[in-house]
Length: 172
Image 1 (cartoon, rainbow, N blue to C red):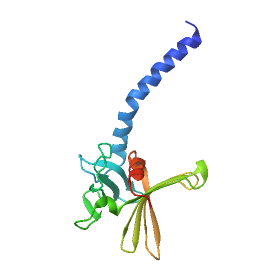
Image 2: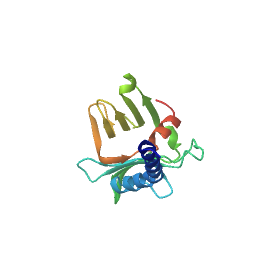
Image 3: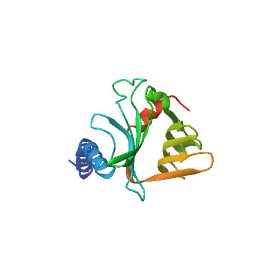
Image 4: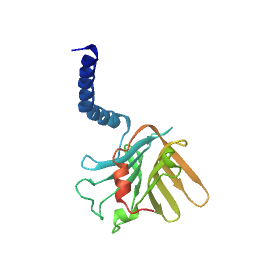
């Protein structure tokens, strides 16, 4: 066996080991870095600790892999890990999925992609946004008629399932 063949063989073994072990390490790492308000039986669609704050923003709900129920109990939760300050939607009888809208944009070609889950309470708009490209932003935002406030994530956000959810929600 030539040196080049041995190197290829060794590289293939390393690649297989990385493929097998990378996902569990990533999930364990993500759980340690980004706390969540989601229960153990819920899917974490998005969760992160807010920069310069002890507060956590989470979007939790049932799995879309098993078939997405239009009346699913999606819920946005915001606050300290021990005390949720804001839980939306907060009204009974609402179809939770009808409360949320998805937005998937590629406004400047391949250089920028924006994935958002949007929702409104009265005149106040909220969003969970992942914006890749020149003006990168991962976090949550709030806007009313007078003020727009972005709250970026500190460290790594858990968002592996967000794009799948965005594409299943009614589009804005």
